[in-house]
Length: 114
Image 1 (cartoon, rainbow, N blue to C red):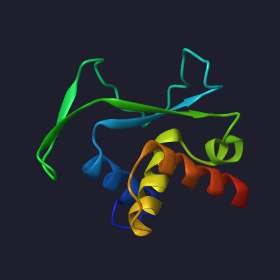
Image 2: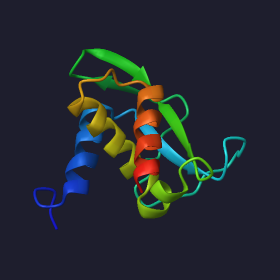
Image 3: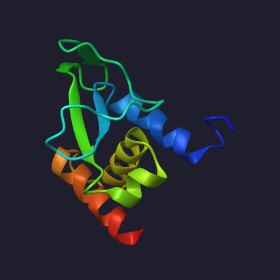
């Protein structure tokens, strides 16, 4: 499948375009110091910054942890980056402010629906 025909690829491309400085990491629990390496996890340097041409601002890397204890069904069915991309897509469709709390809220609702 190509990006044009694969809905998950389209959503992930949208995440990369709108929030290139954000990465979602799958962890066992929120106290974990290590994360599960997944095929689509971006590699960032700790002090790396990104220029967002959409708003003209520079951002530091933002890492959002997704716990397997909090989202077991979501993270069993998709990667952390796919889950984050889904949450971003849902926030944009509903015209919600894109915040870490809203992204997690979307994933909580998805977890309950599964």
